Amino acid sequence: GDSVTQMEGPVTLSEEAFLTINCTYTATGYPSLFWYVQYPGEGLQLLLKATKADDKGSNKGFEATYRKETTSFHLEKGSVQVSDSAVYFCALSAKNRDDKIIFGKGTRLHILP
Amino acid sequence: EAQVTQNPRYLITVTGKKLTVTCSQNMNHEYMSWYRQDPGLGLRQIYYSMNVEVTDKGDVPEGYKVSRKEKRNFPLILESPSPNQTSLYFCASSLVGGFGQPQHFGDGTRLSIL
Image (tube, rainbow over all chains, first blue to last red; front, side, top):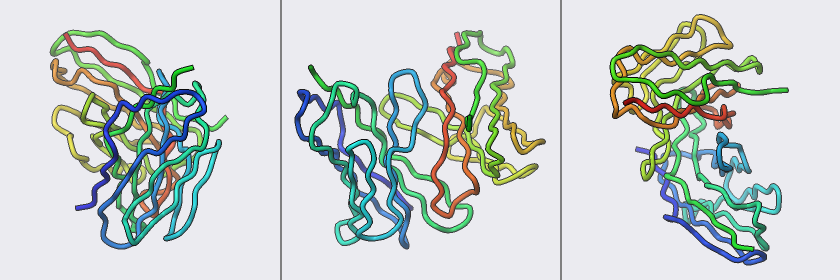
């Protein structure tokens, strides 16, 4: 079945460091891919998405490119801030009706001032 | 403001005492879903609903019930809660089910079953 694998955390970085959180997926067909972010005490929020191969999703300085050849959707940010500390979830949704969203287990990110 | 509202946000209760967690969305979404979030396990889907009067089991439905009598509401019912249902619960909705639609999440309900 479909699945999402993302790097285990926690990831700890200093402010202004470069961030990469790896995400790979297994799916039949061509799913849509998402990154969600969960700030402390809150629900998940959509951070960015990509719906087809080579699409780049971007938001709030974060980027991720849909790589069909490597089945990956790695999240990157050039210069992280303390306010980026959160849990990040990679997810996929196949484009058929009734197909549910499959989430990775989440990666906790700590940014040190 | 478009939102998914869950109540209560926190609840401590005892084994066997029936409880209901309410979920309401104001976006006219067809699809609604319940998840539980546990350390090391990520998000697991409990039940989902493609539309009014249509509900289906997710990955971990045991011990839970749901109903979808109105489009906006999707309550989660624990008829006889047990300690293994202590968890953080999220309700979510999307315009339609599938088709690559992103989901909108509530702020969560933290349940502790003693």
